[in-house]
Image (cartoon, rainbow, N blue to C red; front, top):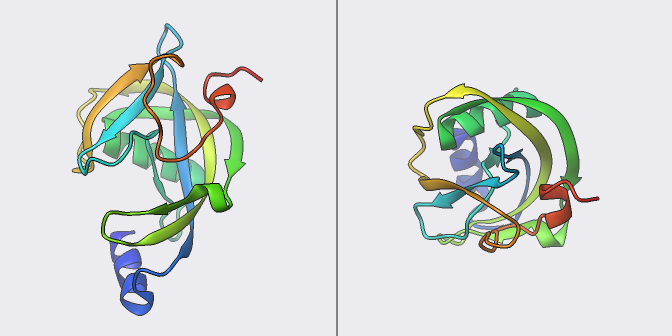
Length: 147
């Protein structure tokens, strides 16, 4: 995906692009939510990322979680699809995106918790009361299963 986005950015610069993406909702046994702290100093986020050309959303979530957390997951359900103005984001380099995010509930199957993605500084589980603000405004009720 990096080369695809790099090529696209060469053509359009920092202008806004609509970007299909996935994000994972992963809970521990206590019901806490797994979040990723970014190395760049950006806000905390769910394990997430863009869908690569030719990749299904389900394939993308498995790949992104492995890269960003070192965990092997299976997706158990889709919790929702989010987008629109609230899901616009400007990166520190000025690149503008508007995500269309498929939010997957995932279950950990295996993995050592050692990520390969340089974007990750740390991963940690949070309760609704102690979680930091997220980069994107997912509803807390959806993240913690309170409908």
